[in-house]
Image (cartoon, rainbow, N blue to C red; front, side, top):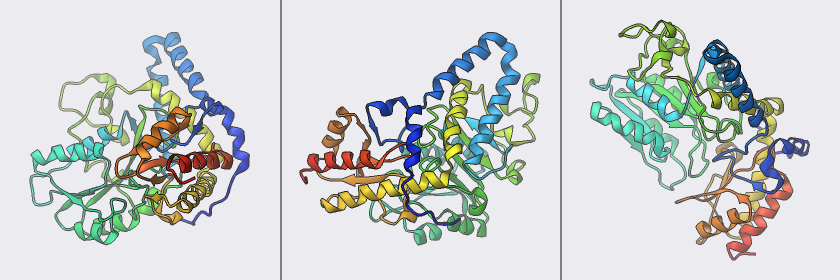
Length: 389
């Protein structure tokens, strides 16, 4: 994938009117939850109107919405239509994939970075009771995982490597392509969680040669909670038979057959219970602006704004708890100093939206709707609150 150079995209300011909170707020927390687009209101109204008009007969239309939303999400992954499914959250997809694996034999090792988001670790830790050997690859700096250490941990006993593309406490990117290549040498699967990166940088599941990719909508995609997605290599469909399932994963869900389940022969076999339709309406609407802009432009603008954060923080002697190189960092920059937690609360009170994490500090995530002037104002306040003005 061609490297993207930092470049301000001032014309993207025209999209600001689509995000009501920007009228009185400097919104720099898209790495945690993106700003709500005004189109979400119309999408929820459309959901209610469809339901009110059709009643139970709305299901065929809802299935069309579900598929359209899934195919729209797939575009952010570089995946073709018809191979991506939706559910409420990534934890479900992690658990469903784990439920399709057999940990009773010698190939029972699960290799994951120790800096993985705890939500994912909770899922895999529970499978220890079924024989999973959970191997956490440690970090030396609390910010990155050495690639060599990750590759060395993957061996012939490894069943799956459920990694994050971007590490949530630092924004450090992992070399997914190299990890996939090593895993495939020993016959292991790789599931990549792109929640920290999807919507702020281009992704190509085929270039990675990943087996499964999961992500969700409420961060950079600005699609609100309740919409997560998973892409899977078509060749895995027969091999992966999840124990965590439901009526939507059935070959003919409205047949209401007695068990055992007849899995759908296509990507739907990893679906479970009744879908979260209101969330899918919202996500489908939210994606449109990002598709119209394009991820290359979003990334170029994000990098240019991130440079301001890094340069201003370094000039004031603050700790940058993120990689400095553009090709090693996702969309946010972590800035830390002794009083950063208290500073985060004061900034939020002043309508600067951001978040704070332990062993990380302030996570500052500029998106396509942020301007250079906004970032400069934020860093002015950070310097004052850090006592470094």
